[in-house]
Image (cartoon, rainbow, N blue to C red; front, side, top):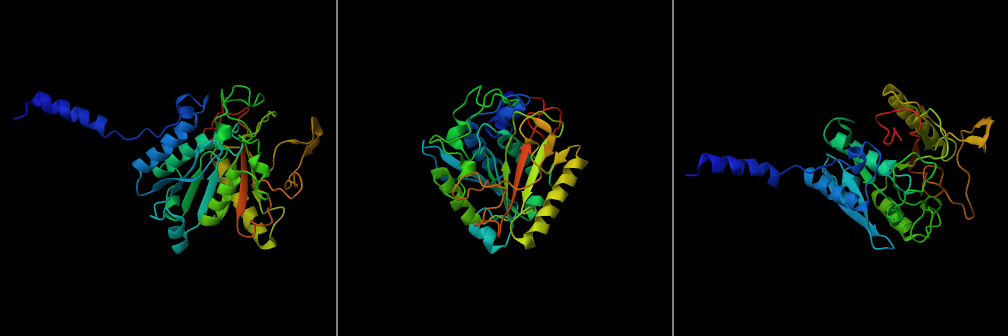
Length: 316
């Protein structure tokens, strides 16, 4: 017979052997002052799948020039965790990406936090029962690992962050049409495979200090197919209304002066123009080859002057 003391010792050890994965981020644990390296993304991707095997699939959709895996999480309570299954069941797919500019990394940390809350039933209750969320924590993986304290000198945190361009010096946010970068080629293959209904690109602004905590830019609103412009406007207004209910102060345009350093010039609510020939779109604005079927959003947390719980680095 096992003595009670030994039995209690064994029982006490069981929770350690089968402990639930820690799904918090370096960002959360540091009080939103720091962000983790890419090995944290690799770890969390696997841990989310381990914690929710019927609702999360962690997978690689390519390899970077420096040999790192480009990871995504397919998340749904429908059981459709592969593109073919989602299409067969006619489920809408929402693609959310962080770190296209790896120094602007709030989207990675906010995305993991939001994902955990949704899976735990603390946020967006029921949303995962009727759609597939495709989350890419970091698009510019190699740039993410070019860590430094001065990569974004006018940005209020994190203490260290990644770099804007890739290891080959490509700005992925100017490469959607020409697709020179291997990372972009991998992303376009992912988009073609999953055919998302909407594509959300998460950014962070720097160099401007203002009270509104987030800017949400949606297209098609100013351009694109006329039949989709009303849907884009409805999407924007509904998201803005939801954020206001939560105490946020969102704006539907990029909060930067029309003329640099001239406050009297006001702000401009418009669609970004092409950056250089050939026509280069930024994710979230009109791209002639996509926006017949995809709606895009750019979200830029300002995180400058107000403390908003939903905005990582709000105390930076």
